[in-house]
Length: 276
Image (cartoon, rainbow, N blue to C red; front, side):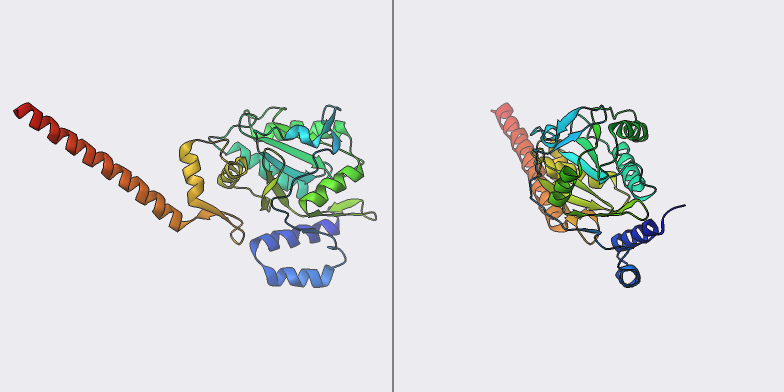
């Protein structure tokens, strides 16, 4: 049976991300004790504490900084592997988004990192979870592309605090209550974007990774595409920025006209030369 606390938490965050603020307020009023400590405080631009140490799915000690090589942006999620509901939905959302994302390749263009918020979970459990989600993400995802880690409570809390990820453990029900959110991080470990909910559009992931990479990945056309989109917190995703689209259209039109006029001038010049 799914614990009542998880039902409250899931309904609250799904309604919050869909904009149903009146219903959310009612849930908070009726169940404020059950939902205490669940929040996200955005820290855009903050660097993660890269010196923190965790254990990966192979039982190897790794530093958080090992996942930030200065070249690849990172999709990151905090979850726990025996979560009965919300974590599974969030991780499913990442797998689906990555599977449907074209042009950018895991390993080559970006990496994915999941850290358990339960200090009691083992690297063996992380290994099983990795197998599940590598299969869900499709053939292009390899074990080196999506890492699952466990760690000590102090290190977990430190990375959660740096991300603004508030959660708490309910001892009576032996469950964690937490928000539904993932993070897009720059290649040097700086927080670039928060994406909320349990469904992550492939376009939002792709544009977010392009943004987080600061121009280090993606084609010229994709960088122009990013210029035409911006992240809208109300829409919970990237939307077209009409002004920039018009500017790009103007530049392209001017370029095409310049090429056409050059061709006309060249043809006219050749005609004059042939007559003389």
